Image 1 (cartoon, rainbow, N blue to C red):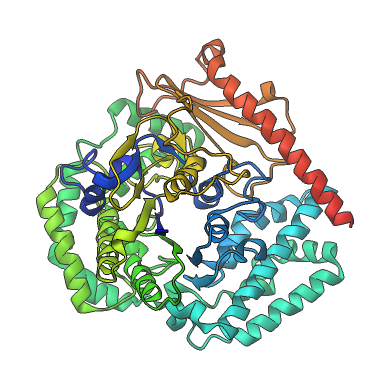
Image 2 (spheres, rainbow, N blue to C red):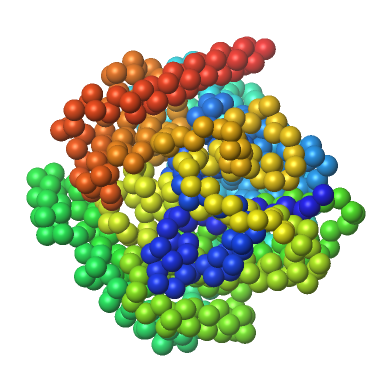
Length: 599
């Protein structure tokens, strides 16, 4: 039985791997693995951010199944850890606690290692702020109260479990022990337990009090374990930006040369953008022009961003070095499965080991980056800092894989490297909105599954990330669990689809009962965005965006108000069929949840 490791590099766009967008590939190591790997050229995430995207990626179920990601991955009957655990594997999870891994999922993770503290702001912005705004105008209904009872219960349970692990299982926070430092975890645990007591005493009163106080609530004071707080800003200024000033000067120069003309918006688009802004006074209407400026000034932006709250997780090098030690120190002969997730290409990009202050390592990294830039020159398009974050990630993965070779594990380990979703921050093509949109670069992602001694297989048909884990299970020789809806991409008997759909709940709280679903569907002719709630008739939804990809491949000109709807019926029918499924499953989920609540 082979070992398996999954490395998720957040926010990587498919065409930023290899030489599609760059003369010189930022991923030479990943490229070298293709000769014994399964790769997919038309893989799309279900959503443009992590909660929505990993909901389907890690479960093999669609994003909006099991009441979407309201409870993160916890309502799914299966997940990647469970499948490997049930097949006799020792499982290792390196993850952040605010990913909300509840007891039902954690039971299948034999070895937990936390990569951050619990971030209340993530919970507040991702779910509870929506209800705090809602109660300003009306009372919560019964269904909303049931959902919130379960959601707050999950949050408090996971938070308590994290603090208990910090105290009783210090190995679980070995990666972030310096971040924890002198933080009074015992007192924080007592606060959580007191809040659980208050919650149990009167859940409805607690909910209203919690929502009314918001970021003034006592829970908001517990964000004391913060990876970013240990980033030394003076070190960044003096020992990175000043010390490697020749590199930054050169990178800034070639980035400007590559983008100032080739990536500039057309005069027509720029004038339309300005006219719309002057009419609306809405800054979002000039975001496309702002993105252009951010692209050509990217290195100044990196420096500025790094002086504020910048990084939520340890660097890729820190995580992979820790993983190397965990693997080296494991006991027993069982095969293992390990899952990692790092953020270098995320919104606030990073392309060096910002948390290590090791001059030898930094010299090595910046030499690699400088050599890459010199070879690349200005023969690329888009945000160079973003490409460098991918180059750095590739470099760190290579170092990690070299350690697997040294440990004699390389030829017995299946390695999956993928991304959860794409990104708005490569700034090519130049669009306006960030993240919450239907732009292809936010969904089109790379996936590579390397099997020792395997043959190269390139999958060129459309797929969603829901098919990624079933493909891995197939390559591992596992039977596909009956709860998994996705299919292995290696099954040639499956009819290839000539379209791909995405589905998620837009920005903010994934409340299926009261908020519209953001569907999109794409084929060779059109990209269609359709917003409709399960509380509506399908035909009452909003045809929000339509792009004629035969004339407008980058999706610049929204023709939703001009297009003949009849032309799109063949695509809208697929969305309607999925809408019917989501509507039925959501109401069934709520019926079961109400029943459990009454018990």
